[in-house]
Image 1 (tube, rainbow, N blue to C red):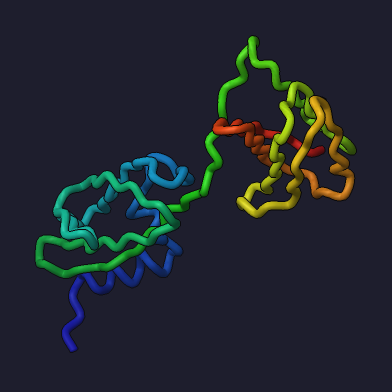
Image 2: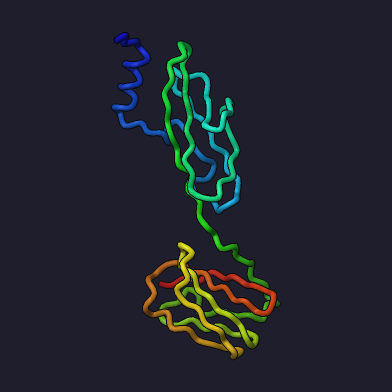
Length: 178
C-alpha cells in the first residue's frame, strides 16, 4: 500500500474533526420547498477542482430541492487524489404567508397568544385549519359565524399557521403561541 502526503494530510484533516460543512457551504441553510440556493465548494490548500453529484465541475451550483436533499462533492488534488464529502440541504414545507393588509377585514388576535385566539371578519362557511410548524393539521372546523374563538391552551409553545378557506380564496396567517 502506497501512502503519500495527500493520504497523511487527509487523515489528519478529518482527525481534526473537519466535516463536510467545512468543504461545502450553502447560501441559506434552511429553504422553503422549491426555492433556489447556491452551494459552494470550499477548497483547502490541497484541492483544486470539484465534481458535484449532478456532474457539474464548477465551484458553485444552484439547486432547487423540494425536500431535504444530500449533495455529494468530490474534491481532487493536483495528483488526482479524491476525497468525497456530502452535505445535506434542509428544506421546509413553508405554508406561504400573506402580508398583512390594513384594509383586510380578517383580524386574528392576540398574536402572540397564550390560551385563546380570536378570528374576526370571517364569512359563513369558513373552513379554519391550523397547522403546526411541521405542516401537520392540529385543528380543523367549519365556522358559520363572523367571529370565533379557538382554545389553544393545550398547544405547545411555537409557531403555527392558520389557513382560512372562504369560497375560492385561501388566507394563511402565522400565529405564535407563547
